[in-house]
Length: 455
Image (cartoon, rainbow, N blue to C red; front, top):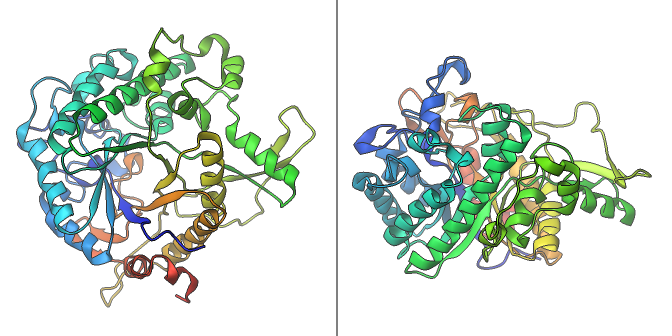
């Protein structure tokens, strides 16, 4: 079955990773501005101060997106660019930047898909307790209401949070990401609890304030397991493993997703974690559980499992030696774009949008000026073919966003990794369409038909 005629073909980026202009026109600092100034925390001392300079070059970037043929662009807003203190007085130049960007995208025939929070939490609010402060739900709701009032007449598709597993688990657990905290597990869960309340408050604000009827989702990490064989027992084992939530970490699908989509935390987690789980006050879970229109999910890989005669009913399958990996060391698992959407839709009943998928690759500008990245083409083709299989089997998948539209600041890894369809020379900020961008343009133009053609 081919991709639906109205399938969304997009690419994605995030504010701190591409915008630069870290203190331009009244923008306030974020926790990432703070962390990038801590010695030894970011690869080679890199920062997002300038990044891709998208803040000043957005018109050039939108023109390149149009050249690729994107039908949608997933962007995020910088909360402290709009509200330097996180709440209170609006920074008009910062909000006006997103006004111009949205208009530029619409003028190019590209639909903006806006994410409210992609990790650049206002430093002023972090100093008031950040996500550990219960008031963070109201802070985020105030921010969402301002954005809805300003952009909601033109923006139709919204997401609240990007990857709570990361900004809580890596930002408040391992300390690898901003704000760099290493909290006890119970405190991580409390911060996540408040973040999910903030998600709910933002959904309410968007529905109340947007003039154009909004379609709202979110974009967690897709922590996916897939069957190591065709046997029905292996399939059920993979399903059970994907939904399981018992280990003392946040790298699972259901802790956050059940709260948001079902209004309850998964029973196996509550039993396993006991008193470490947050004590929900009256109304907390109802606030988190706001109606959503789609399940956005970021999927890069998955883990094979098989049926086993143990309490869990499954066990992980070790990958063979020399298993293909990306430059980041992530396993290349095209099956993740089949089983991820399938298991997510089975549990939550919503149409699925793949809000991130891509790979890091050691791209260079060749002597003739081209950027040849056949690995990215092969990776994306393999994954999209499996996504097409999921659609053919009746899974309602509405869109795909390649990560990323351009090379950018990869958080603690600095500029070590290149994920983009567009090459960025960080000395000059020159942009070059990679071979993958030209190939993706053909895929989009034919609504996926090029996936079945020789490259």
